[in-house]
Length: 367
Image 1 (spheres, rainbow, N blue to C red):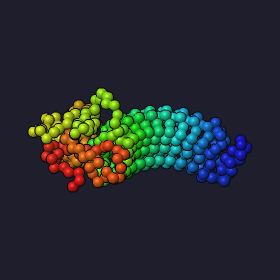
Image 2: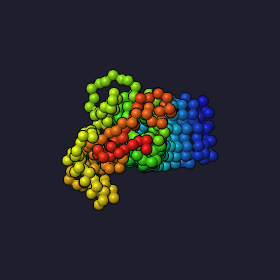
Image 3: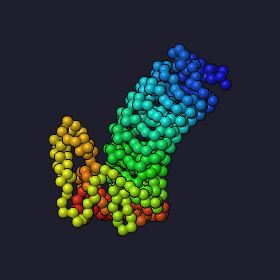
Image 4: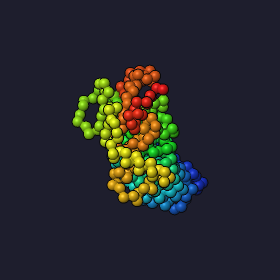
C-alpha cells in the first residue's frame, strides 16, 4: 500500500496533475511525500476521504499553495491548524464526518471559500470570524452540538444555502434575516421554540425546513406561500418554566422570541414611549444615512444602538420597523389551504406580527 501511495504521488508530481485521489488509503498521517520538494505546486484538488487522519500539517498551504478544493470527509480530524487560513485560493472545504470540537478563527481568512461542509462533527459553537467569508455560498453544519449561531453570520452576504439540522439550537439570531442571498434554510431536528419575526421577508428565501422542532408552534406569516417543512412541529410537550414571552389564542400558546419586550392587543390606545422614540430615530437616520450601521458614533446605550441597526422585525402589514412591542395575530395552518400538504402531521400556526392595532385589524393572511 505504501509503495502504491508513493507511486501515485510521484506520478502526480512528474505529470503536474491538478487532481490527486488518495481516498480509502487507510492513512493515519498526512503523507510526507505530499510535502516534499516543489512537485505539487500545480495541484488544485486533493481528495483524502475515508482515511484515519487526525490533523493537518502546518505547512500545507506552503507546499500546496494552489489548492482550490480539499475533501477530508470521513477521517478522525480533531482540530485544524491555524495555517489553514493561508490557503487563500481554497473554494471548497469538506470536513464532514470527523471529530472536530473547535473551528479555529483562522477559517475567516479563507477569502475565496464558497462551500464549507462540517456535517457530523462535535462542534458546540462557531467563531464569529466565519462572518468574514464574503464569498461563502454553502454552509452545512448538520449533526453537531451547536446551541447557537453567531450573529456575525449575517455578514456572509453571498450565502445561499444554510443547513443546521440535528443540532441543539433553541433560537435563531434575528440578524440572519439580513442574509439577502439566502435561498434555502434548514433547521430540522433542533430545540426551536420561536423564529425571528422577519424570517421569510426576503423574496430570495424560498425554502425553509424546521421539521421536528416539537416546541415550535408559530411560523412568521412571511413564510406563507413558500416551501415549508414543519412536520412534527407543535407536538404536545410538557410545559416548563420559560423566559420567552407567549400569547394565547384559544387553547394554543405560541412562544415569541426573547427580544420581544411587550405584546400589544386591540385594547391598546397608544404605543409605549420607548417604541415611539426608536421608530422616530430609525426613520430619521434612514432618511439621512444610506446605511443605518453608520450610527455607531451616536451616543446611545449599546442595546438601543443595536436595535436601531437591526430592528426586532418589520410589520407584516405595512413594513414599519418594530423595536420593543408587537401585535401578533394567529392563523392556524389547519384553517389555511396549506393544511392538505401536511395532512395533520403538524400543529403549527402562522403568526402575523403587526406594528399597531390598525395593522392588526386589517391584516388578512388569506386575502
